[in-house]
Every structure is written in structure tokens, then in C-alpha cells.
Image (cartoon, rainbow, N blue to C red; front, side, top):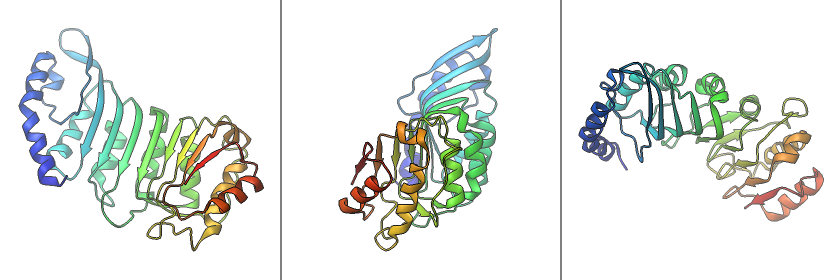
Length: 263
């Protein structure tokens, strides 16, 4: 779906949302205009017109559309809100509107958080890393980062910051892991059950066919944490140019036979 189609979708829903906003009898909502797909709203009020709690099923923010950018500035005026899914999409490599949203307007709680970069190149995660890690306690179940460039230090910081959740995804990311990590102390009490590295090893990303050692460094790093070895059930390696023989060898070498590797 291109930007024009998304804008039309937004405008077609605007009247419906305005009517809903009026029915909420809350002044704080009457200036809030953004599209919510499959919205599930829970509103609790303190006094006659001040909203204290909002729950949205899905909150999609498309930063390539001016109306959405304007709307994110309104979100910080909400006293409290949470979502099942928060998705950020259509942003620039270095987009201050995104960092502003993460700093000021991110939900109090989000079951799932996704950041999807749509262009061909890979922006360095460093521009957003501080803000992403800062909101990590608010993400309860899963984080997914799509098509970022991530080095060893950034990779370690992400894993450690989100060790409390069930799922961590780095789909189509360009990873540069030049040496194994040591997670023996930093991943104590880790709860991660599944790690998604789909497409990370593809030729246009990390190219693990020609850089097999970098993939081996990742697996060896995971094996250094006793708690992660206990919690981790599955690693998704779809389209990563990794053979079953490589996986079998690494699982045996690092004592990961109980973990399922999806190829």
C-alpha cells in the first residue's frame, strides 16, 4: 500500500473517529485524529471530562503522512493509555518525529512493539537505540525491529534490554557480529522464548553464506547464558543461507540441542 492509499484510508475513517471522540465526552480526545485498526477502546474517567485510561487494540503510526505526524504530538496529552500492538512505519533513516514519539508518547504499556523500515537501505539502529531501550520496561511480550543495521554492541544492548519479554525479532536486519558476546551475567533471569532472525543472513543483509563465522558468533553468544539456554525454545533462520549441517554442528558444539532452529 503506497502513501496515497494510506492517506485515503485515513480520511475515510476520520468522520467515524470524530463521532466516536464526541461520544467519549472527553475534551482531551476531541482534538485527537488518527486511524486505529480494529480498535478496542476502554475509557475510564476521573471527574466529568478527564480521561485517565485508554486501551487500543492496534495503534499504527505512519510517519510518512503529515496527519499522523501531527497526531503523535497529541498523544502525549493523554494521562494513560496502553495497546496490544504499537506499529511505527514509513519513517526516515533519522526521523526526529519518531524519537519524539518514543520519548514523549509511547504507550504506558504495549504487548507488542514493531518498528518497520520500508526502504531498500538499512538505517543504523544507533539513532533510535537509546529511546528504544528506554521504553523496554513498557513492552510486555514482543519487540520486532525490521531492516536496521546493528553492530555487536548494539545487538548486545537490545538483547539485554528486552530479556524480560517472550519474543525478540530482528527481521531482515544487517547484523555485524565480529566476535561472540558474553551474556553469562547480563542475561540472568532471561525470559526470551523465541528469537526471529529471518532474512538476516540473506546476501543483501548479513550474508551468512560468505560470513558463517558471524552467525556462529551469535549462537556461541547465546550459549554463554545458562538462563537463556533454559528459556529459549526457537530461533527462526528462514532465508538466512544457513544449512542444516551447520545448525546441527553448532547445536552440538554449544549444547543447544533442545532449541528448535527453523530453516
